[in-house]
Image (cartoon, rainbow, N blue to C red; front, side, top):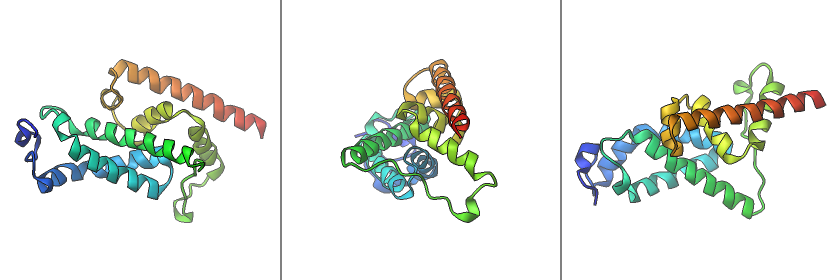
Length: 174
């Protein structure tokens, strides 16, 4: 049972009020999952599982805290689990499908960037997705990752440096 859950915006044992409280966070969670997993079906599955885990872990939410980093941390962990399961099952990382209408003018550069992101470790990719794809502040990135804002800034900086070097090397090899 959640202590003082009403101040969090949901009644402690009411699934409907929790669902209404969580609903505005789902699109951001989906974008994070899509950025991490690069597959729409897998991203939907990860967010659904994260929502179920959020319900089970609702007692860990502090009512005075921002719910977005709390939920995004659950989504990120679920994405890591999904990638582990996928790897253990022998499936390889799949690139997201880009529809013709969504394809940018310079698809080759975007494709190289996506490939570079897929080669990053999950922690580095997560830091970049949170900061640039979801446009979170360093404070929110830090809360989601469970580190300080300064540590989040360092992680993003290192991930960017790795990505830049990797993409630059790919461009030289062409």
